[in-house]
Structure formats: structure tokens, C-alpha cells
Length: 292
Image 1 (cartoon, rainbow, N blue to C red):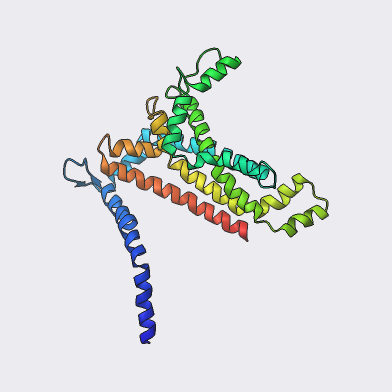
Image 2 (cartoon, rainbow, N blue to C red; image 1 turned 90 degrees about the vertical axis):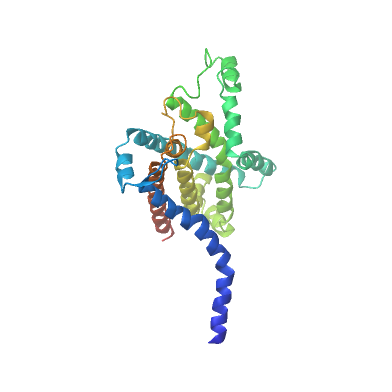
């Protein structure tokens, strides 16, 4: 009995640093954000309790719904490209070849570059006056005059930013898919070859079903990352034109800091967190169904 109690205290001592970390950096900020969402607080004046008024205001705020729709459009646009592109690259680089290591390295290098740095790089590449992309398109005769890629039209800006994010992130999905493909037992692949299955049949009926769990994982990561998009839009368009390229997180930032509406910003953050939680639950249910 004494030994069991001693083991229990020893176990608590081992996990205590992790518990303190979670309490300080997760539980307390979450509780503080919920408290702030129930108050009107401009940081300068004292917080004033207003109940659920911030949430009622958010659901009736057209600018919030505009930013939410734009974020969903960005998510729907970029997620399939990352999934399909990453999987095709994994199929190309998974088999042994002389250029496999070099190809993987070239595709994966942008992943280790900071998102702010890569966004700034593509901001210069898409520059109207001296950007390389406009220069190439003009030389090839594809366009007659420089295209205003960023900050003028929401659709064009979204396309340009999505291009930069695909370049930055697609290598991450590729590496995960390569690991899943190489984890397939050799016996299964050899059995399909003995049965006379062609390359297309092996991919669609053997490789894809056995890697579906990784596909769902990459989809979940892509959806969450897209819903939380901020840096690339802040750097490349700053929400222009007229906040039409402001994502949900960008809208939270505008209200929380430049406008000093801390309570309203906290309420928007909670709505966004619940939305991401709903996507995560759906994804976990799909993952469990794929395993059964």
C-alpha cells in the first residue's frame, strides 16, 4: 500500500511540469478569452460586463461573414490542390530512383522556410512594376500589360496567395504520403503484381485505400491551417481591396488590436475555435470509419 502511494506521488511529480505548462499556456488563456468575450473592453477603459452581446453582434456583422466566406473559399480552393498535388508527388518520388533524393529535397525545402519570409518573397515576385512573374508572362506574350496581382481584385489576390502557399506547403504533405506509401507491406504489392494488376489498379485499389488514414490527416491539417490563415494575407494584401481579402483571423486581429475591441475580438476567436472543433470532430469520425 505504501509502495503504491509512493509510485502515485512519483508519477505526479513526473507529469507536474507538463500539467503546469498546460494550465499556464492553455487552460488560463482559454478561460481568460471566454471572460473577455463577455465584456466590452477597449484596453484603455475598465472592462464592462455585457453578457452575450458580443456574440449577437458577431452573427449580425456583415463584414465578419464576408471574411468567413472568403476564408471558406480559400480553404476549398487550396485544400484539394495540396492533397492531390502532394499525393501525386509522393507517387512519383516514393519508388527508388537516382533522382529521388534530389527531387524530394527540392520540393521539401520551401517547408522549412518561414511563412512570413516566403510570403514576402512572393510579394516581390507578384509585384506589378518589377515582379518576375509579370516580366516572364510579358516576354512569352501571354499578357499585354502587367497584371495587378495583389490588393486590387479579391479573386486574383486569392489565386496569387494560394500559389505561394502551395509552393510553401505541398512538400509537407508529400513527405507524409511518401511515409504512408512506403509503409505498405511489400507482400501486398507483390501479390497485386502476381494477380496482374496494372499501375493504375495498384494505385486506386491497393495504395490509396491503405493510405486513406494519412489522406484524412493531411486534409485535417490543411483545413485547420487554411481556416487560421493570417500571415500570408497580412503581408501580401493587408486585407485590400476594402478588406475583401481579410480572412477570419485577420478580421479578429483588426478588431482586437487596431480597433481595440478586445471583447469583440475574443468572441470572434471563440466562434472560429468552435468552427475548427466541428471540422476536427467530423474528420475524426471519418478517420474511424475508414479504419473499421
